[in-house]
Image (cartoon, rainbow, N blue to C red; front, side, top):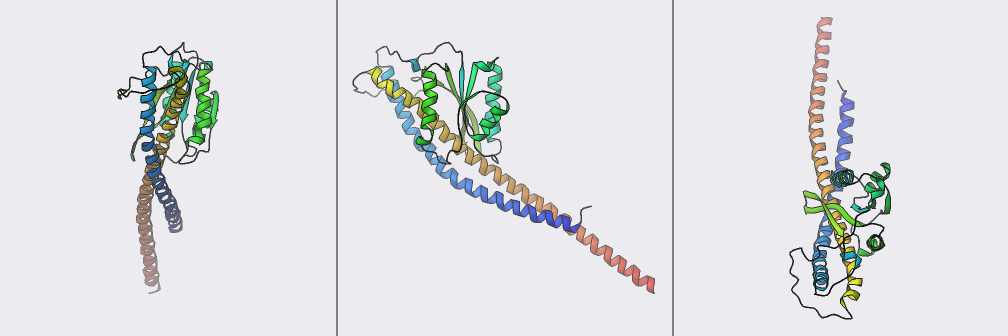
Length: 287
């Protein structure tokens, strides 16, 4: 049986741990509010650029652009959004499991796919499994700006234009609520279903010099916006998952402290009882 000192030390260390988890929960809750606002405020822009691109692409003229045409898939790119730090519950493991299972189902050779990794956890996961990482970025801010991801997003889209990959899929955690996040997978390129999302595209636009010239600029921006929107969504999910995980850790620490306090009181009572018994026994022996 553990001594009183051992139990007391465990209670003290658990209380210190609980202070840390509670502080991390409060920090994540604060970051979540801002990240949720960022993700929601980006939706109108994403919807509008999709509406404009769909309106122009479906305007009647035959558009010949590589980003709008499906081709034989020889190599697939997977854009995977994870975090740089752990302590976020199943946030990283869920999305990495989904990506890994998809790769195992779809591909027979490592030459058939490549990874674009966002976040240290994802990058390390694929490196340990000797999976090719074409591009990576780590150390993103908790509230990233488009400038932080623009270079990676632009280079990723250019990989498709240059036919280094023939399909681009994105995997990330979609923010549902503070206690619920779900893994989302979307095909970003080619943009074969750009006009079939169910959103209205009945607005009339006048444009010059021509559809192809405008789409030459808009289509890469639209694809980049999809990647950035997924990143914002993933960041909100990350903060929510970490807040929930730290809250659960604090609750567990509190339960452990209660159990240890009960054990401590029982051990102390047993020790006092034993001391009293020894004193009574000693007095009786002297008589």
